[in-house]
Image (cartoon, rainbow, N blue to C red; front, side, top):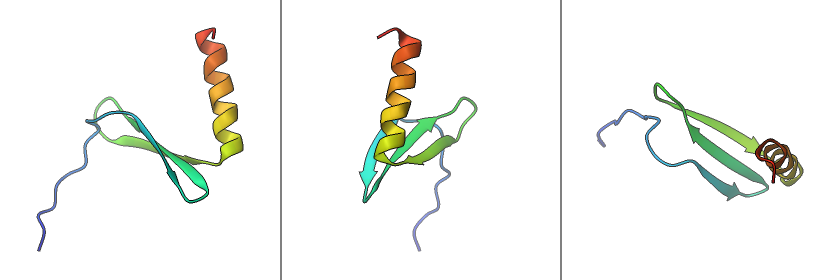
Amino acid sequence: MAAMKPRTGDGPMEAVRESRVIVVRVPLEGGGRLVVSVNDEEAAELRDVLAGVLGD
């Protein structure tokens, strides 16, 4: 049997395409990860919203 390892929030922010969706994993303070699944339209909207906040 494989050893069970606890999942932590350590590690980089990442986004990967899985079939028809993009899965974004964001490490959180205090441990854990926020995992969000978005389609292409939602990802483009998120990009635009973040660009507006950053002033780009």
